[in-house]
Image 1 (cartoon, rainbow, N blue to C red):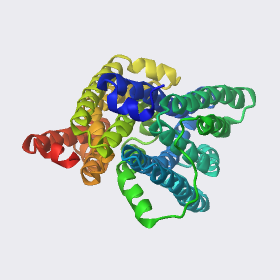
Image 2 (image 1 turned 30 degrees about the vertical axis):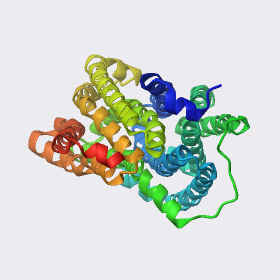
Image 3 (image 1 turned 90 degrees about the horizontal axis):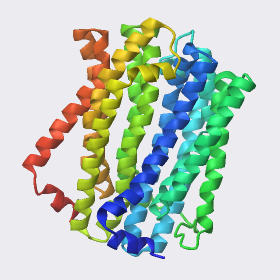
Image 4 (image 1 turned 180 degrees about the vertical axis):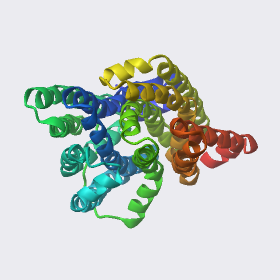
Amino acid sequence: MMTTTEKLQTMKPSRLFLSYLIPSLLGMMLMAVNILIDGLFVSHGVGERALAGVNVAVPVYSILLSISLWIGMGGATMYSIALGRGEQKRAQSIFSQAIVTAVLLTSVIIIFSLIFEKQMAYFFGATDEIYPFVRDYLHVILVAGLIYILENILSIFIRNDGNPVLATAGLVVNSILNIILNYIFIFQFGWGVKGAAWATVIATIIGTLVLLLHFRKPTNHLKFITWRLEWATVKSMLLIGLPSFIVEGSAAIMIVATNMSFKHFTGELGITAFAVVNYVHAVFIMIFIGVGAALQPITSYHHGAKLFDRLQTFVKIAVWTGFGIGLLSFLVGSLASDVFIDLFAIQNEEVAAFTRKGIVLFFIGYLFLGVNMVYAEFYQSIEQIRFATLIILSRSLVFLLPSLWILPTLFGPDAIWLAFPVAEGITLLLLIVFKTYHKHRDQSLIS
């Protein structure tokens, strides 16, 4: 059987990339399905107002996921580079410190959030009418937050340890159970949005148990060894993982800021319409993250092993893959907007019309998102954090937040939907300009 090292160094680039891409895409989509299923069952089983309430609470899930990506991607990048250099004990120490750091950091954040739970709900965009639904979902997600963190970090490290199939299998089990339990808890037991939250929690626990099977594999390099927190290691881990944290953390900020913008310019109409668009977006954004997640262990290893020419081949494959998925996503949004509206059982015609318009305008952003995400992940995977962070900040905060207020002020409420495409398009334009005037910069960065 070919070892992980042999596979990374000798397998045909396109075939190797696909061996990571397919499980990664499936895994990331299944993570999004967990959120999407909650929305579908809530909208059908509880109502449109409950759907809006869950969407207001979703940023907490994004915050927890961002922490797991922050520590997981930072630690896994260092882990793969260490393996590429043949430093197995060092790799195991990085894994151990990543787990401990995640537990400590998450515990502090969860305790703080539980203390200010009500204030957080209203800050995220809750109104008096939807607050009860926000509260019911938010509390369960916070109480079980540590489980989400550990599952995602384990999944990332297991993928980097050459077992992307098991990492995906854990998410498959998680998603299937989430669907089954959502149906039981909402439609059979009548637990409402609390049922959706508890379905996600229980499914995540079982999915984590599946991931633990990796530690019984003979070729497993992952081991929790005697450790002590090394500040230099933790600092590097957090710096390298910062772009991943910003990617998912900015998703939470985007949801909160967009809800606030709709609340100001349209009221509950826009909040409900955005809930539908955002649930669909949760699926598509995970596809793009999946492309980057497939690229990361490959480029990190090749960077550590100093196989630079082969590394550049993988980047080109990933860029074209990201662009192709972006184009396909735009076409799906343009042609299937009514399908998404019917999927969430939107009965109010005014909400449906506003949602339909929003899907078409919002999905323009996918034409640019794929390339932006690939280059951000590439620079992160080779420890060029400044470049990765600039890309992520540009697309998620610097251009997005002002657009959410400037566009509707100048052009009316419909223009809120264009804030995402404008931010992604400007970021890609600046990236093209940068690469045009620094043609040899990438080679000097990785060497």
